Image (cartoon, rainbow, N blue to C red; front, side, top):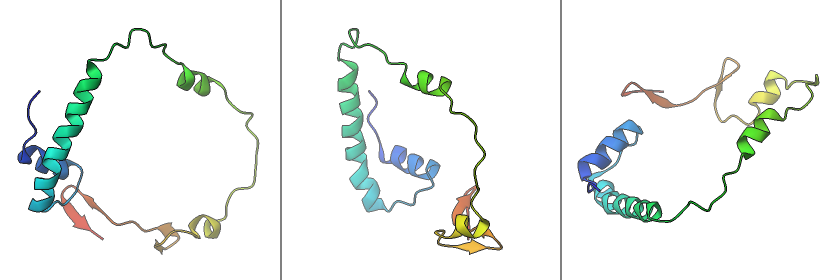
Length: 101
């Protein structure tokens, strides 16, 4: 397995839109390496006797009866949103490597 480098961590941070300091990159590099090594150990385990479950497939095929019910008002839906503007939830984020508020 390829060893994880600081450049790999910086690349992952950029893809995840995380801003990491050099100290954080230094800290996370060996931690990620240990996590991946643990996953590699799992690959060595014999899983031939494990029975697959179809829980997801079964739950998707079991549908409830479609019943009409009262919807939330706009005020009720926005009640717990920390920031709202013009009747919508206002969020902070980054888009295409540019920060917008």
